[in-house]
Length: 216
Image (cartoon, rainbow, N blue to C red; front, side, top):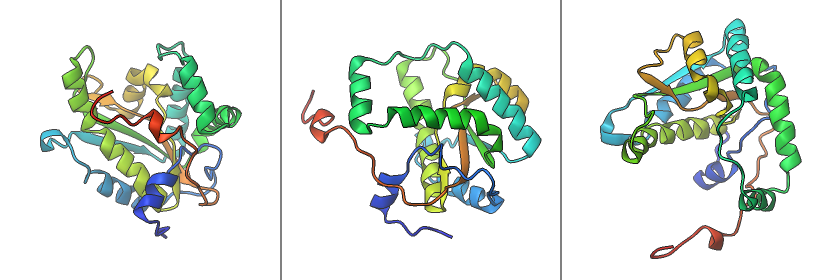
């Protein structure tokens, strides 16, 4: 059953869902396939359509890839550290940093229970590539993945874009039978029905802080 959200409602209430994922309700395959059908309508550079979606619903395989994700998320990474402005903006935007931490802990502990784990890939690797090539590659897959998440929201499903598992991308690709040398993982997205559908627009920093006319 679709939620029949307006386009503005859909765009402003598609949240990163962690605590409100229904871990006990299976997600029908046909809903995930519908989301992929909509995802591949997204624009893509030179119409190359190099996207792939690996969806894991098998219980044993979910547990295997969830263990890899956990090990990767716990490994020392090279993520860019938060600046004072980042912290201020995060607090201004939501005032719920403790809740975000609780959501991550909940997801970390229960990832194997999430009914569907979606791993999007794009053909071609950007390791050491120029900014131009990186932008072209990522710009050809990220709109499709976001479209998948919007389609999921309209169908009463929640999702969360995670990148913590990318530190062990090679190991995860091996577990999924994906040729690491040719395909690059872009995210790791748990998908489940949501507990309730009453998501609201998030508090964000003022428009004046992010909008620039005619230049910086």
